[in-house]
Length: 434
Image (cartoon, rainbow, N blue to C red; front, side, top):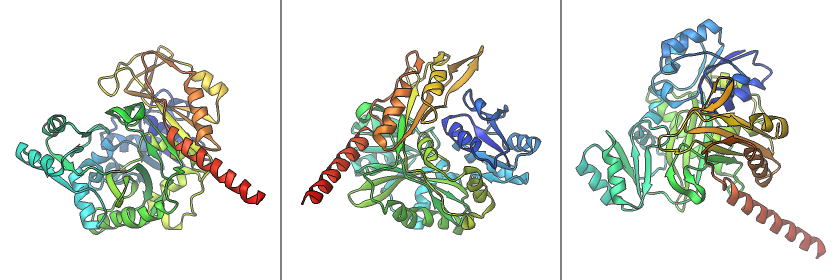
């Protein structure tokens, strides 16, 4: 089939890479794309927020499936325009995408579905803000109700900082702090059937040790050796399926990618947030582990036939991705800096490690930075330690003046898994000796 992917970040590069490896994909297009995506897909200019323009482009290209990557086009109703043109589209309607477009809407859906989440207040006045902050106390969790490119959330012990962020938003959700590790779980759905993918964990803070400001994500890994083996089944039963059923009951069926951001708290699993699309950088590691060809799964979601799809198959390998960000990110980033070393990674590290482009463009034949998060270096290995080593080895070949990255992506999980493996081997040796 001919597939058109909408977007131009590392998530879309990961999607395009997987689609380019699918034997059923005969032509692959991306609009607007980036310098890296150009290596695996034919690029076309488009205003990704203009549904009519996207539908026209898809029609001109003869696309048989359109995949909308970013959240803003989904909330703007681009998927509706594509479907109205008679073309299957992977991605929810503008109405259903409000699950991400409005934190308040998501809370209302969760209440109706009986989904466990943090207690919260929706505030629109300074008095309401002060009352909510006082009710919950520190640490304060303050979320812009609308889209904010992954950077609309402030978690802080500083009351003044929490209040300042709340006052900067037109409408804000203030909620109780959820303790425990966070997990990202994607599910592909057609509005009825829900197909969970493998869980991942991402790193939101800019600096090592989870210090510094929140970002769109500085790295991720999968699988999660510390997670309960029953976690995916539990989340499917208590979160994903009830949410999809509730949206269908409301006359707003959700098809596409449902992303649940979860906290594994002392009181059980709680939903932190929903997204209406693949997450970045978790997509990079989840797709690196997916063995099932991607196009047929996305088309089944678009066509409402997920119930007849064979079970997904996964590689045993672990995957780690590390984000290289521009100078000054997540504040106003510096752009236009040349990027060197990409050819070295391709020559020396592939196929176990590779680079996915996020904020890049081609300028005078050279690849230069064009955004805050610039590259995602992704690697696979027999375990997290091996995948980490390959990712950081490849990253070491890349040169971007003033760039920054975290050095501790998946470090604790790899160390814990190694210690558990060593303890298990010692126990087995002791039993054999006995």
